[in-house]
Amino acid sequence: MDADTIIRGGNVFGAPAIREPASAIAITSGRIAAIGGDEVLELSGPRTEVIDAAGGTIMPGFQDGHVHPLESGLRRLRCDLSELPHSRDAYLQRIKAYAATHDDDWITGSGWYGDAFPGSLPTRHDLDEVVADRPAILGSHDAHGVWVNSRALQLAGITDTTPDPPGGRINRDENGSATGVLVEAAADLVAQLVPKPSAELMERALLEAQQHLHSLGVTAWQDAIIGSMWGTPDNLPTYVSVAEKEQLTARVVGALWWTPERGLAQMDELRARRMLGQFERFRATSVKIMQDGICENCTGAMLSPYLTSHGPADQRGMSFIDADELRHIAQLLDADGFQIHLHAVGDRAVRESLDALEYARTANGITDNRHQIAHVDVIHPEDVPRFAELGVIANIQALWARRDAEIVERKLPLLGKEREKWHFPFGSLARAGARLAMGSDWPVTDPNPMWALHTAVHRTAPPEDPHAVGVEALTVPLEAEQALDLRTALDAYTIGSAYANHLDTESGTIEVGKLADIVVLDQNVVATEHISAIKPTLTMVGGEVVSSR
Image (cartoon, rainbow, N blue to C red; front, side, top):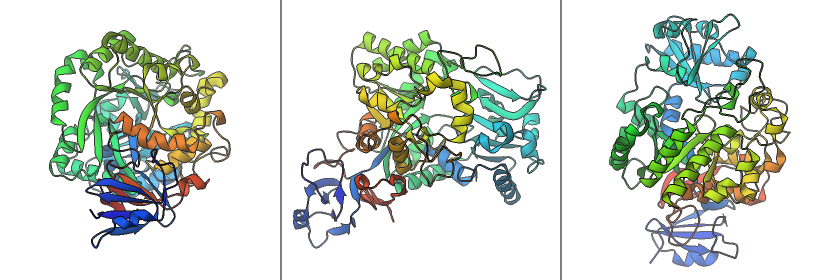
């Protein structure tokens, strides 16, 4: 039978069954039919499309293990600050121009970095300079806070005496006045007032994000929040609609949002939502649990206090769910066949998450649910080997592991020298035998897999990244011994994330019989040090071209 497509003239990576170097693959009926050299051309017929890889890499498509595509798509359609240099003036100019050309009742956007401002955070007064006539709300790049103007604070009824809500904080200046930055759950005080995007806009946003991810070589992902988030409506209907219209070209696993305050009362609803998400390209089989915040604003849950002169003397961050309750939640979800996808940044949150998954394993026995802990910014050394022992996937965001000014000036001083050594310990996890999956957490940071791979290997920022701010970002590795070798990093972004998504028997490697979910890169990825400069030239899902350059 003639092949539908042959890709030749490249360097095949990720073909574990092939011992000799391979330069070509053949695709028939959406699957890989052959792997080899020039002999693969013998499968060519009159209707076979032959594609020249021009010496680049033919490899399995990237699978983003932790991403928020719909919110990212909305960002691209709104006032997007994410690709600007870290500059107060640049931010304000973009916001002013956006407000002048949009007559929306609210000015919405996101993507700012705190280090662009004196004191490392913006204020309502900054925003008032360019938007005073309407309320404005802009999410931070890490999605753990919002920047609002005075009008938005007024509409939300937030005054200098408004108490912090549970799980959140209203930032205040030295005089006790609300600054206009609202952290974690406090952001909802304003976000709940913003008009919700329409169903049509939600679908546009998802398709916008999908096309961007395909252009970067991403063929599958796990959406880390299926539910209402960051002021947007529930995105499950959006996925269902796009899947029903057969417009979802990626393969997607959805992580259903666990609402902490509802506790176990939401189990029946989660089961029902899982049944709604049962399509060839979309399955809602995971549950996302947020156990803490982030270190930069002292909401990441730590075993020992932060080293800070601000706030309580014994400030250890926030565990959003009581450790005993988390164990019972994990046991019930595991027994019901859900994968558990935990957000844990601080070393206490990581330990509480591991304890909960160990409790579930003891109670239910070993399952194939493939639970994972995402972010793992700080892990106590005693907990590193537990990932492999418990079969827990470490879902890492490698692009974060560099000495940006924001990390050097805001985060590392809060951790101190001892905990700095435990910072993003990817190498230690790999050496201890942990399974690694890799994701971007877009829109928190850029979704380009090549940039993440560069940082995983070099522990420095990609030169192309506009957020590589600070004298050390490009030149001084962040804990160099925690670097990954390139093959381990590539595996994490392909077969590692495929394993986490229960897609490893069908994708994640180049093997005969597997789905032709493939990316072609413009260089030989294992033969260049400038990893971040490599670009995809072709992305295929099931043998169909979804992006071409």
